View 1 (cartoon, rainbow, N blue to C red):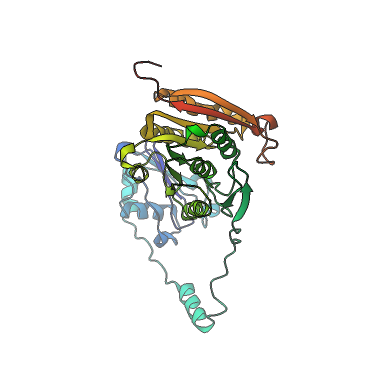
View 2: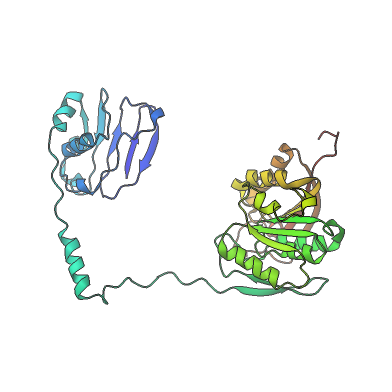
Length: 367
């Protein structure tokens, strides 16, 4: 790794394919041009055996702009222990650097070991095959049955996914129950779900008579294909389609599924257990603002799975208010057990699902 900085303290890092480490400080190059003061030392410099040859290499590659005084530190893996403390850090004037610049750099030796390995592979191709994959294969998908007033609903969950799509989240369960107790909320309406996972609330909305449901998650093939499988195997789901979508991105692929008379916005948005993504709050709010009708509602249900970050979860609603939305708490339900047993923090908080509704203020009324 080469690290470099200007006199103003600008730092950056460049990965290199070598064991050497060089640090250049104190030059006159301004940081505004974003040009590195020490570029990568390539494998051609692997056999340099002195700190002065390193200076020569840097200068010949035009990788350092020398100012009035430059301090260069040269701890090198092979020679660091062989040089004195006074030579480990050297300060050089421009004239000294000019003399160093004229020194030749030793050529790179032939890659004897590389050619020997190629010959060995030709003679024993089977013994030198690529080793088998060390990571275990992904577990197979799982299915579960979710009871609804219209009959049990079979859901398939992906076997494992780094985006947490292999869980049926408590927020999705509770918002689905909320829809079942207020079916008029979605009947004949257009619905969009963000970060859907298995898509339970969307399927429930479809069964309750929603006019059109667009269920979305991160555009990962396994997640979207699993959503489509759940739609195909859900009896009475109605008009439900699945699309990949990045929060805050162009919404045209989603609104393209809306009937022409509905325009380019949705009546109902569903956000179930998404607020733990603190870095994505602004993008979520942008999507809500862009795609929620003026008379629509966004259902935001979540559990503070990390109680010590509860305030960070709730910051989402402050951002929503800042975007001009009204925030109203409509539900608070405690589950029988926590979702993640290994998590720490107050169990009562980790069992609780909070439900909020976001709406636009009425015309002519300021918030």
